[in-house]
Image 1 (cartoon, rainbow, N blue to C red):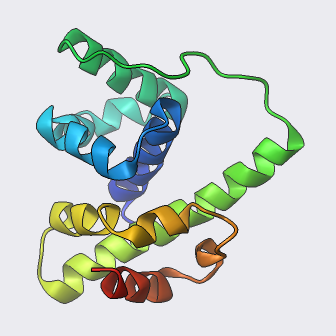
Image 2 (image 1 turned 90 degrees about the horizontal axis):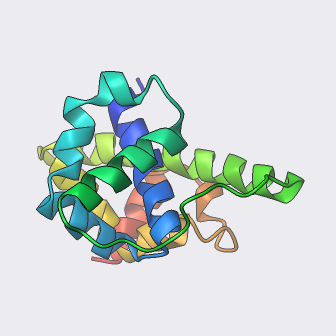
Image 3 (image 1 turned 180 degrees about the horizontal axis):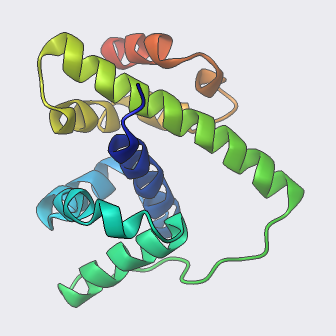
Length: 151
């Protein structure tokens, strides 16, 4: 069964990395240091009511209020057909990531947060969103094996 909170976190995290154009490992450290993961979990019911872009902007504003200087896109550009195709691939990758986090936590007896951190800090995470690798098409089991190889 899909864990909607983990799936939401995966999407928001990916979008935030894109917006800042920062490596996932650096964004994960920022999220951990400033309590963004906890903020998403605590306010999930409210955040999910608006668009993902609004949730990313809320996090952006939360960090700015805490004195973090952020650079990146602050407005959305018009979507093209290619953008929609890429977003569909990202959606599939987000689903794989969500399943992999849940499976890893269950199989290794670790928390969802520990599994999320382990996967985000692996080289496989970057490969998952590099659509030329084709990793996004393989499913969560193969993706998890790739994470283990890259440790």
